[in-house]
Structure formats: C-alpha cells, structure tokens
Image 1 (tube, rainbow, N blue to C red):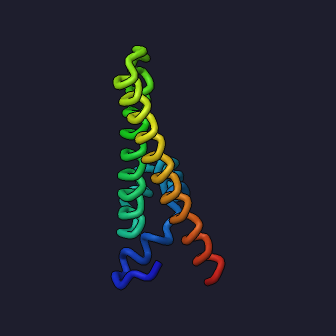
Image 2: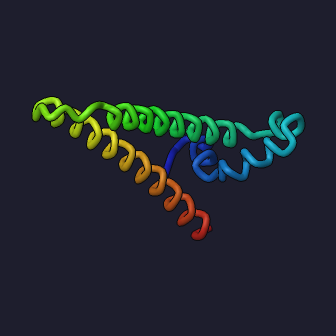
Length: 109
C-alpha cells in the first residue's frame, strides 16, 4: 500500500477498533484529540460498515421472497440471493486484505 499522500498513508496504518475504543471510553477528551488520520480511518470504516449493512439488508429481503414454484420467479429470487452473497463475500475479502496488508506493513517496520 504505497500512497503519495501522507494523510492517506497514515490512515492506512490506524487501528480503528483501538481508536474507537479510546474515543468511546472518554469521548469528551479523546474525540477532539483524534488525529486527521484517525478520523479518516474511522470514516472509511463507517463507510465500509454501512456498505456491508446495506448488502446484508438486501440479502435478507431476497431471502424473504417467496418460493413460488414458478421457475422464472424462483430463478430471479435465487439470483438475487447469490448476488448479495457474492457482494458480501467480496466486501469481506477486501476488508481482510486491507487488514492483512496493514499487519504485514506493521510487522515489517
């Protein structure tokens, strides 16, 4: 992960769970003390979480579609479920890859 922008580079190395925990533990003191990199990393995490939540909601809706016995309608239902599952699997893979890349960079430094 080689970015020219120092802010983006720094944000890529932020442990968002640790930062969120610090802020939650003492919001009055820690929220205003968060660095720009920490804020950016938290924004990326919030965006990723929202994306996963939307896909999960769409998956639930697709799974709630009735099985009608009509091959065309059932195929559309199955396709919707498979699409949502594939999108979620992709999002999880991207998150894991980013986590693994950050961990590898931390271990190398």
